Length: 108
Image 1 (cartoon, rainbow, N blue to C red):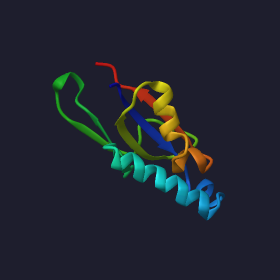
Image 2: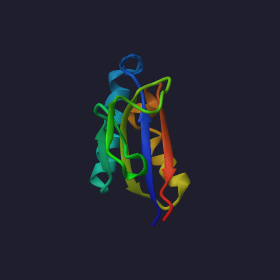
Image 3: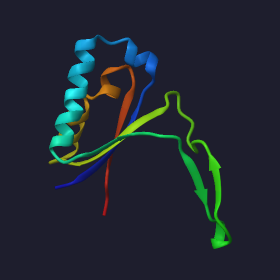
């Protein structure tokens, strides 16, 4: 079964725009993904890591990518195909709270 990585983007303002019932339903979807074996987490503060030509590790606080919305979290899970993966995340908090969820198939 294919594996997918998802990245959720969203902010507090968008989250606060939806009803409490919708929030509860979205979190229930996350709970269902967890129960099915998905690895789900909220994004913390990023650190960029570089080691150009293997000459020494360099770190820098903050994200490398700049986006309109901050990265809020991620998930890694198996699904039958891309359509099934999209359906699974289409009712998660970032998707329903005026954010966006990217779905990335893992290629091996």
